Image (cartoon, one colour):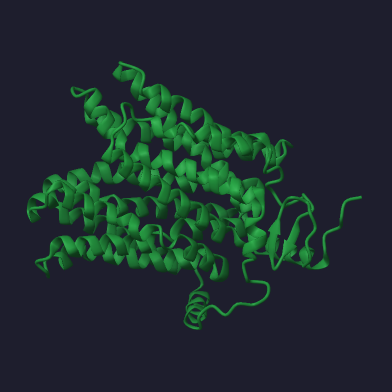
Amino acid sequence: MQPQPLPLEEARRDGAENTQWSRPECQAWTGTLLLGTCLLYCARVSMPVCAVSMSQDFGWNKKETGTALSSFFWGYCLTQVVGGHLGDRIGGEKVILLSACAWGFLTAATPLLTHLSGAHLVFMTFSRILTGLLQGVYFPALTSLLSQKVRESERAFTYSTVGAGSQFGMLVTGAVGSLLLDRYGWPSVFYFSGGLTLLWVCYVYRCLLNGEDLILALGILAQGLPMSRHTKVPWRRLFRKPSVWAAISSQLSSACSFFILLSWLPTFFQETFPSSKGWVFNVVPWLVAIPASLFSGFLSDHLINQGYRTITVRKFMQVMGLGLSSVFALCLGHTSSFCTSVVFASASIGLQTFNHSGISVNIQDLAPSCAGFLFGVANTAGALAGERQVWCLLVAPPPCLPTPQVPQPCSATPVGRGECRPWSWQGENPATFHGVHFSDGIPQPP
């Protein structure tokens, strides 16, 4: 006989259902967050797009330019856990709005502030670190928001749609940013991305958020986030779960492969096929990734609605996003045809978007009440490992690009094998401890 859910647990689940978005609200927020993710990446890649022009204006060498570029991740890795925890406490939408307001203003003001001091490199390095700090809270807060507001049967498509904004943002900045750079100089790229972000913030504040709720959230922050028994994160119990470590391992592997391809794919094509056109390998893989991300979310939710177990669907998506994408990445380094290489690169990057319907929503299923915190932990590990791999390749470039992705199928094995067997707490007799839901069916004291 299976244990019955506790009355407190039933009350929490009923409360969660009452606070979930309606279908029109979900559609409005999905489109808005898609645009927000796009603008996040527009601001993030403004500096890389303008790096050559800025280095010429300020007299930077390659090492100094690399320092300014890489400093973004020094800040990005530090606020993942904080952003997730704040999202769990005061609401992910409020964390996203506040951080977007700050990074939008900083991006738009960068050209003006740069000329106030002669130490251009120091200022740009500090600016990139601060931008990383502000943007580091975005995805953990987004995970927290969707875990609380979106139904489980619609969660994968919603997250994959919002996640497609990252590829869309890189394409927008690569295309529009390049035109602005050629015609008006590098400051126009920062004005463009920062200004659009501030307009997006105004829209969200006026049309989607309650101003009183935002003021209340600021008041909670000012009080130092007082902790109650039901809002404390049970660190020990959380990290004793094998499923938690499997989630961290999968996120680490997916982040490593993404950062390596993002950073080194252009160099790989330029050195292997020096006569090829840059716009082909810089644009085509990311164009493929957008519909692939949408398809993965649609397929995941469709399979769940057809009666397949959530656990089975999540595993399938993760094996596609880690295992199969690695096969194409490994093949990429063993072909002498430019067209075939573009196909392999596009397939690898496109299949990586299946992670949006795998590990990204698995974390929301695993611990809905602290999904932001858990995603922050996993994404911190992934970002640190990914940047370490990028720098290792910078010091000792491998004979072919995909070599560092070999561990991917190994990290997918625990998910595909079922060692993290029950991923979803809904309908799986969830356990609870201090408000955190676990899904291994083992009852814990409330």
